[in-house]
Image (spheres, rainbow, N blue to C red):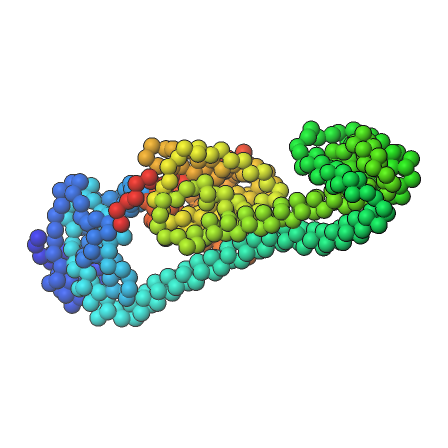
Length: 468
């Protein structure tokens, strides 16, 4: 390394407006350093120790994305600078945010970060205050908006979950009330049968027929066409009407839906006065149906609760082996009300191994991608979830059949605060957040392909946990 004259520093656009005193100050503290073509000047993630200003030659700047260096700038312009460019800002970070390589034999003016910070604070205090405030303000604003984005997403998920839970809960409450009335009616009808002087053998036979009716109703059977179902109801209603049973056309659908026919009902009628036994059996079948409805409703509630636990990874380690299918399915459940008009098609490779990762954070990725897909389709269409093995990565694809992303918006899809939604409908941080989680937290990649027939987002997650 060698010293650089104040005169040569003035030829660089970055320093041309400085005073002689300031140039002398820089020349005393900085040094000229040469690099061969292809030699690294500094590496991303290393301690941010120097500011580098290109004096001769060329440089290539890159950033690490998905384990690969992505070039963000390449120039031979004298005075181009890189490295510890924000060292004068408090809490600006202590690591290089990119990598720089000399593209040809090059010479750089190298200034220690501490001296650059001293230069700015000594000679340009007002500028430092302004830039410091701008940097911290933008960072805090972004953090606030991200927090609001997470809260908005939580509110959406909570509303969806409340909607999904309300339906089975209301069904269970309704069925429970009806069941209470049916059971009371059965007790009364059984009392009427017993008081009618029916012998114990007949009562025993009626109980057997009751069990038989329940068994027949529970068995799967080929579905009837509407015409066949109407014919069976008419046959049963005619039989009941012939026997003088009041409300025959109200009882007939109950027996027909249970798979009972006139031949079976004849067996009941052979036990004596059919009025009481038939109504008792009808209430029995109604009761079984109501209990099935309650079982189905409570089962749906249990499924939703399980989906919430899977989505949030409650009571589990933050980093673990994650089954992406569980996360995808629980996210679909959480977004159930928004996907009511959407057909969800799953094309899963169930042989895929688990991926090392943060399950709750990956579910944020699936939420953003699926939510965006539903918006792109306007609430109707086909959502395709596909998983496959892509080398040493698991690939998850989320596809919609919407109109695609406009050409002018495609380069900015992952840009923070950019959104194609109407004002108030999106913050523009969903895909930015998804990219951060996939690429920074999991060292994977997030890409997309779009066209007039729809858009597909592709997430690749490594099967081996990368070094921190």
